[in-house]
Length: 536
Image 1 (cartoon, rainbow, N blue to C red):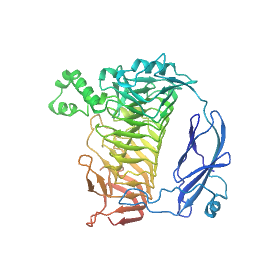
Image 2: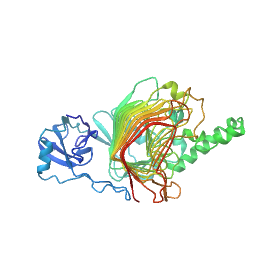
Image 3: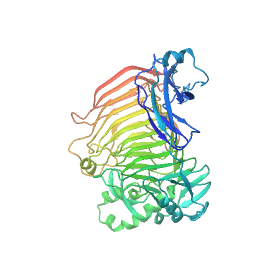
Image 4: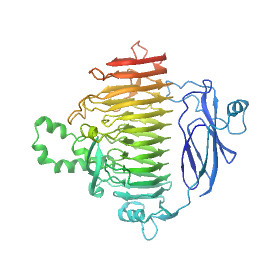
């Protein structure tokens, strides 16, 4: 019997599990979910939420694995022809055939206790949701008053605020129509706090939501936090980013004047030194057991959800928007473990998801990898897609990605690092996904810092049952452009070639002109099994 994971609120249980390696007679998986012996529903996905439950009540939950006829994904439209859903009334002969061996997974799960609401608009807080009144003190007081028996409640309205801090055992709920809106004034994100940006520890402006205290020598010191609901959390976006960069440029003026012309030209770029102190939307440092669920997350001044030296971080059923912000990543595990995201959509100005672990030389010395990362049932409508690197000096391993549609992205799946990074990327599995392209390559940007003794190692990666479109969405023009479907370019030093890569049951879309859809340089032991080219 396979294990599954779950997260609870007082009225719902969200189940999620890893996709089985083998199919049922070549069929696409479907699952039936039973609660106390009664059918709760069916899904073709590897997650399911049971709703309208009683608080503080134990339920017997069983998941049965069945199957249906496998259908190829549509290469042109970027969506599966079949969503894999099936009717929940009754069991067919086919269902009974494949559930006779008992449940795929089962467990007894208790919902959480209901918490008393601390409404931020009620006394003693009296926050005003007019989009104009600054409510930082009122909302912060509600967060400080929150304990294991209470939850901070944000009703409908636009509540303007500066940086906020959450402590352990906090629950924050945003009602439908509620917007927690960060200002565009850098002063509202003081004090600066220890953080990490593009692989380097430094003091950055506080993010809109902050939890934990950064320390790479210690385990998590903050946890059991739930941020959820049907509302939205937004920061100051591009306006805040530009204001921070302008202020930081003035502060660093004398330092920049002392550099060589070449160094100054590099560091004066807004995305480098002045821009590295920008706040995130949500900063999670040295935390454990944090869940963000059901929300719209948008307009961080740089990355949106950034977890550093953390573990057991879950993000589900959220929508990310940051198209107008450079470095506008959606979800970034950074030297963190057991991080899971599913059911999310991305409209970002950079990577939808970026997995990181520090930059040379600091990242090599700290040596904290990102590992056990799970990404499934996510879609990239705009942005780069899923990236590992380029800051990966501490190593990245055990990444599994499945049932993702990245057809709206620029890169698809990208593994990258400079020759100076050191570190490794290994044990990456991608299954049942639609990708514009697959890229493993060395890059020459973000290349400052003393180099590691040896180049990085990219190895032991598996792509199975994926469709590679050979077309990407240009991030500037928005036009669809042809490209190589698979590009593998390793490091030109013996022993550091890209190695042990498997492509199995891969469908490549040709560009109609006979161009080769695969490019390889400095590779070893790259295997292709059942790879076909689809007509455009």
